[in-house]
Structure formats: C-alpha cells, structure tokens
Length: 169
Ligand code: FES
Ligand code: FES
Image (cartoon, rainbow, N blue to C red; front, side, top):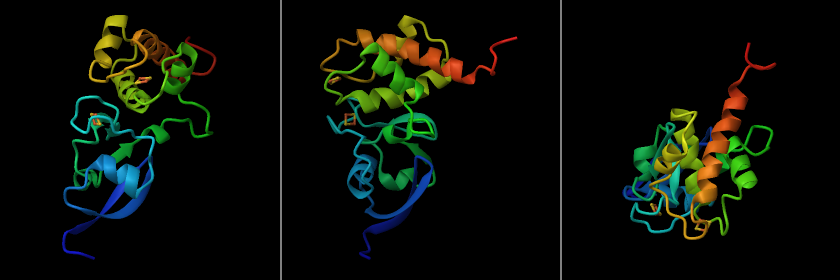
C-alpha cells in the first residue's frame, strides 16, 4: 500500500467496512466511490446545499466537509440505513411519500437524514421548528411546503413507533 493511503474501518449502517483512503479523501467520496453508498448525493461540495448530509453518531454532518479518516470509529448512517429492519420505509421516508415531499429527489437523502436527527432531538416540532430543522438544506423543486408537512408527519409516525403497544395508559 502506498505511504499516503490509510487503512481505516468505517461503520456504515451498522456494518464495518475496511477501506484504504488517502488522508484527504472526503467522507462523501469514500461512501459513494469506495463503498457504493450512492444514496448520499453531492451537490455543491462546499457545505452549502446539505444534499450530502449523513448522520455521524446520530448527528447530521455534511459528508463533503469531513475527511473519511475522521469518521473512522464512529457510527455513520446514510439514507440506505433509514429503512426499517424488515425493509419497509422508515418514518421519515414514509412521511415524504405521504406528503409528496420530493420531486426530482436529488436533495432528498440529505433531508431524510437531517430530519431523522431533528425529530430524535425534537419529537414534536411545530411548523416553525420544522422549518428551522431543514433550514440548512436546499431544494430547487418543491418550495419546501410539503417537506415541512413531512417533518411534522414523520415526527408523528416516529412517536407512534415509540408508543407502547395498546396505546398510552
Ligand atoms: S454537497 Fe455537501 S453540502 Fe452540498
Ligand atoms: S426535490 Fe428536486 S432538489 Fe429537492
């Protein structure tokens, strides 16, 4: 291996992947090109659009601003990891489908990961809080209204998931 390559282990969606990367390989490029997680989209490559957002230890991070070597040893979740274990859509995905929260879909993986973290932190967002939650993600198509609706619906679905069977006492 060349001196400039670093052997690292990236844990993506619960599975470990050993990969050799140059020190300055971006996490977005490692995910897409080295590991095949092409659901992580790259738009601006400058930390502006949010399309490349993934979760690192549950926190939304712009993977175009992070080196892959910095992500070693942390839990990374990409859009491919948001479905339920049985393959059904997760709450945020389901809400986007119900609320028509996407058109071309380019921005969507970044919204889905951002909102997943957002509703974990704030399980009952108001509409204003939903807008704040997605303020760092850009969408050219939708006008955002349906995405805001999807945030509130996703929070509702996630709350239902957490509710004990048989409903609240
Ligand atoms: S591609 Fe990373 S923020 Fe735009
Ligand atoms: S759905 Fe097209 S950029 Fe958001």
